[in-house]
Image 1 (cartoon, helix red, strand yellow):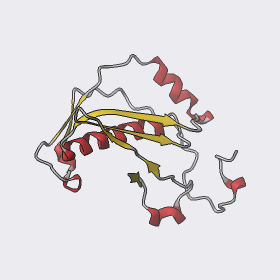
Image 2: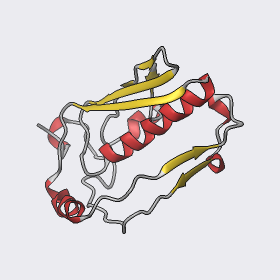
Image 3: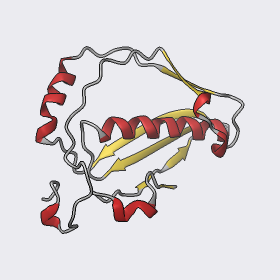
Length: 154
């Protein structure tokens, strides 16, 4: 399965090109559905947690509509990075004590991947810590798409 987590029509307006993610799905003999994905160039402070949460939830959703029990979700990284302007945010995160993980409840009546609604999801036991937001490199569309105009150039 190929997941497009962005709208291809928006590519001309994107500051950085998004990449399609192949999401291999494996159904095991014991009726468990497992999935994995790879991020080619994830930003550790923001992209990684978001991608893990989204694709883990997608795994739960796919398991429900196919009648399998949810298995594991595995996420691997390519060129993982942390921007210098996110170091303060990362330092704060490292001082926090891990909390118990919440449990996701999904409306059991949903039988089609296209029928999920936001109100059908509930994170039971979620105790979020206070927000900490890093500065963004890109606040508007760059005037040039040449590699020298990108703050993410190699």
